[in-house]
Image (cartoon, rainbow, N blue to C red; front, side, top):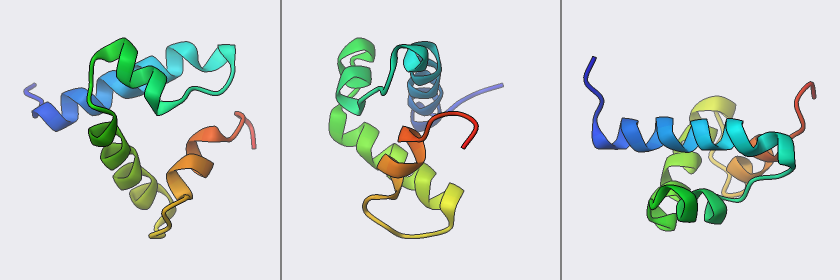
Length: 72
């Protein structure tokens, strides 16, 4: 299976998020530094993911969606 660069970065960021989520909230800045991905690019990816997930176009939605504790 071939992934686009965008897809590869998205998968990498989500894996990083899942690995480090047990330690508490994970900021995009932390993911950016650990994975050497541009912060502005990560913000775009997570914003698009939040829009797809929530079906809403809210600037704050990606922060809310990915900051929720599991089980809520």
